[in-house]
Structures are given as C-alpha cells and as structure tokens.
Image (cartoon, rainbow, N blue to C red; front, side):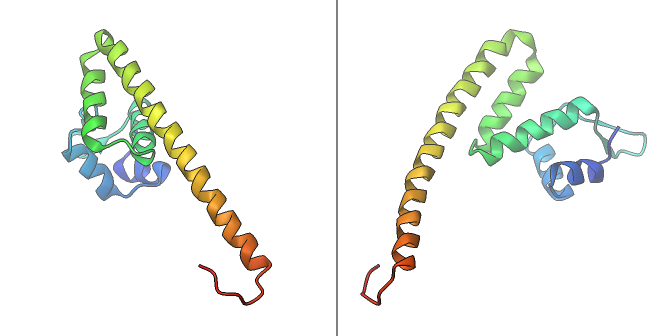
Length: 122
C-alpha cells in the first residue's frame, strides 16, 4: 500500500492535488487505514496515473469523473468508457495537429532571426 505522499512523489503531484481529486469524486476507489489516512493500492496508483493522463491531455474534471463513475459501476459500462476514450483520442489528435501548426510558425520565426538583417518584422 502507498501513502498519499508516496503517490504524490510517484505521480509528480502534490498531496493537495490528490486531496482535491478525492474531494471532486475522482478517487472513490481508495480506502483509508485505521487512523483515517488514505491508502493506495497498486491498482489505485494505475487509476491515478490514468486520471493524470486524461487531465494533462485536456479532459475536463467533470468528464474524468463521469469515466470514473462508469468504471465504478463495472463491466456493463465498458463500451461507454471505450467510446469516451475514442472521443478523447480524437481531441488529443486535433491538439497535436494544432500544436504542429503552431510549431511550424515558431520554426519560421526562429529561421527569420537566424538570418536577421535588422529589417522590421513581427
């Protein structure tokens, strides 16, 4: 079992963030020990890593909560969870495409400065 500080270190989160996720209903699967401290299993840790992945790739907390709620219902929701992942993948692919376009503009600007001759240019 892992403590909240262990999970914070492993997932590069603050303990505050983990408590926030718990308060928001994203961690209904965790248990508490005799003294009331959160304790995390290996499976819990994997779920937190997934939550971080989804959040870091742009999924909103309310949608992550919906996914977790469906997960807690069980196998009967697998197709709905799969569809959520498919939809999110589309969003991530679009983000990547948009970032590639932005990167190309930045690359052009760097090339401009590498050949800069003092002319005015934004």
